[in-house]
Length: 132
Image (tube, rainbow, N blue to C red; front, side, top):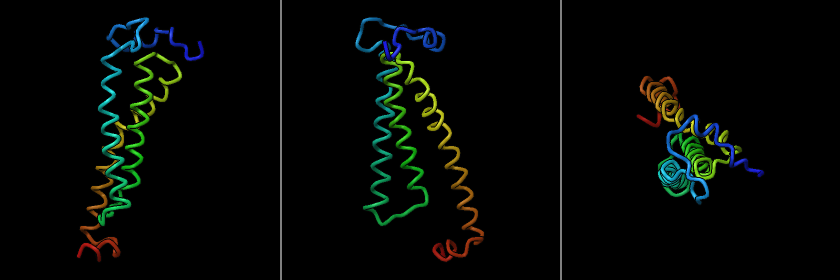
């Protein structure tokens, strides 16, 4: 009763996959597809950890990439709960983390463009000395 899993109104309005009541996974298509977010999160987090602590390569985006990996991990968990059992409390977290994951790559690419432009034109003397 606490998770409000019987309230299907929101889900039925948003998705076309039929709900399978009295099953362990109510919507297997949407639920099991979250494995790809989980796998991607593990790859991004492992890469971020490796670049931060093991590799000699240090980039300006390690912290933001680790945050992105964390958002994908949260998305995989909350989306699995939302699609698997329709727990209303997980829907807000699912939407929030999905928006964060979607907006991250355009922001990262714009930031990378600004970073490269500043270094190319030597506007930052510290970075210009490392490139030269």
